[in-house]
Length: 302
Image 1: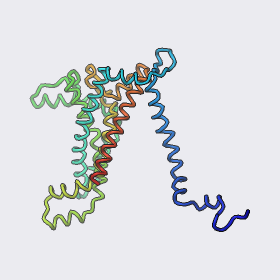
Image 2 (image 1 turned 90 degrees about the horizontal axis):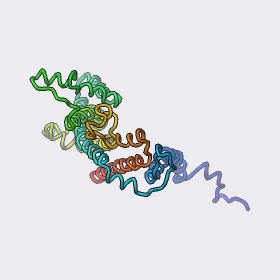
Image 3 (image 1 turned 135 degrees about the horizontal axis):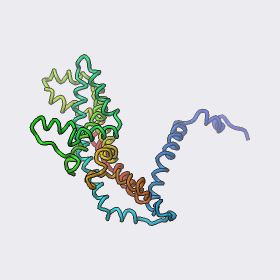
Image 4 (image 1 turned 45 degrees about the vertical axis):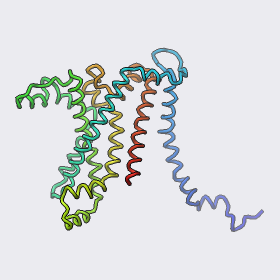
């Protein structure tokens, strides 16, 4: 049977594919890569969370269903870690957003030499988290820390920061805000660069002041950049580990332990991979829920 002109051979269709076929061909490598580095590890993690898998017991893994999750509900350390993580998110994310917004607006001012200001935004962001924790652990040290030295010079008594749950938590939150505000500032600064100057010039002609311009022009046009910054910052806040680990180790007691630290403790220190996987699944679910809420908010107001 001869091939007609209206029905090209299959190899011809591959050489000149339709838009749908071309899209599948181009997305297939990315989909395969995502399956290897995201879908399979997450699926494996969820499966392990339903098992009793402890490397110290010497017993083979066994399926226990929701037992790890039930144990989690009865675990007071998990309650402390979850509550501390929620507080860190609630305190440091708005704090980093407010400080980052101010830094971005400062870096966007039309003065001649702006590069030192913009370069300074990179320093906290580029500093390793564990190193930042060590630096601020020294800053807040009772005997030779800079913070207590400044308080003594101002006539106040020094604070034993890491012996008090509240003061230790406050020191950690201040450190996280300082470390992460530059990241927020960089994203917001990129958003500021996309706002046309003509809008501000037209507002000046209409007699709008700086505050009104900020509320009616800057904030609405910065909404996508702010939401993206909030998504990344909130997810990383849920995964907070390095700074409290280096500053307090979770103490005093469990007053500054985070969910990521408790996962590390169970999987690395206790070698309880089943329970640690269940904790990691809960943290992953929190991250996905918050991302979904942010994206819905962006879509609703878009």
